[in-house]
Amino acid sequence: MRPVLLLAAAALLLAMAGCTSGDKSDPMLSSEGKPFILKGVTDLQQVSQLTGAESPNKTDRFAVYGTDLGSMFNDGDKTYFVFGDTFGERAPDQIGGGGSFWRSNTIGYTTDDDPSDGIKLDGMIADDIGLAAELLPSAKVDYDEMTKIPTHGLSANGAMYLYYMSVNHWGDPGKWDANYSSVAKSTDGGQHWTLLDQLKWPGDSNFIQVSPYKVKAEDGKTDIYFWCIPSGRFGGVQLMKVGEADIEKAGAYRYYAGDDKEGTPIWSEDRSKAKTVVDDTVGELSVVWNPYLERWLMTYLKEGQGVVIREGLAPWGPWGEAIDLVKASDQPGLYGPFMNDRYTADGGKTIYFTLSLWDPYNVFWFRASLQK
Image (cartoon, rainbow, N blue to C red; front, side):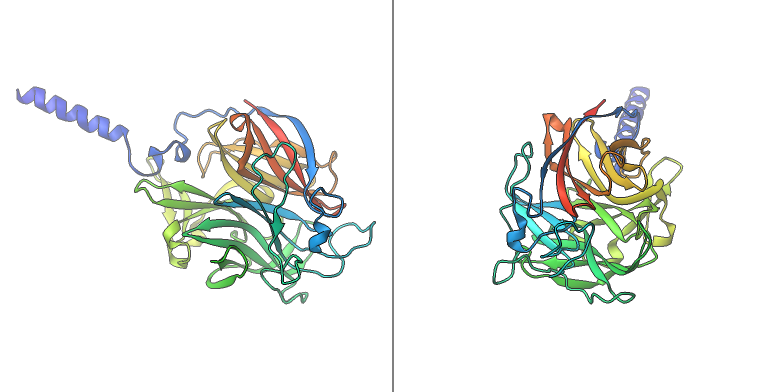
């Protein structure tokens, strides 16, 4: 009986080894045996204009005549659209940012879950007279703090968080200097925000602009992954994560530092050990899990080329080649392509995303179909 028992024990150990714990146990967190399957995109369409006086939402009624960005996050049945520098009055033929009644950031919200005909905003977080409020005030002093730009938001632990960058100076196209990046918190649905000064990343770091995504951890809790780039549009992507319960603890953030000999990700407390997972000129990135491909999707502005899309086999990669999503020659002055996994169709084959256009300095709603 002893040889039989030993063989059975050996077989059990092999089976247990095949069910490795940690990152490799989750299809969202494993690249083993996966091929790249994204071939390209088709049926690119501008569906609607999201902001501005000419949009169906007529956001000039909130004193939002011109704005940009429009990254999205979900909280319950609401989706929040986070905008950047916002202006209440502008000349009709003005191009780019500028105008009067300048607010560094504003937020609109919706319960519209049908993206096919555009997004109807239910409203905007507003002041006492109904005008879109500046949520994170800034000094508005060049070479000090020119503005505070939220790069992305999320809901966690019953609160809302905005990750933002403090911009010191806007430089040449695609280049700007940051003082630091940090986080603000709201516990009343976005009406009021508290700056979490204990969470700061240096202005010269690779963690100035972020795109977060929640993933269930092995212990049943939730980790939040952040794909991160420096200030400007000419750096690559690095990766950090934190447990949802520890989102406000600076010492709890971990940085992807490569793989060990078994191919298991190494997570370091030391930010300087962070490895680049996408080496490109990346601006305004957005990352989501796509159920149609069962892969990660990353969109960003590649300066001079346009908006591109990449397929990722795991959060840390490998990542496929950049594929054209929207060409700069077709939409001059484009930037800020942001996705939200709430807004897909056909099982994720069709994706919807916001896109900012420098002329007329407003946010538009686009769609495209994935080919695999």
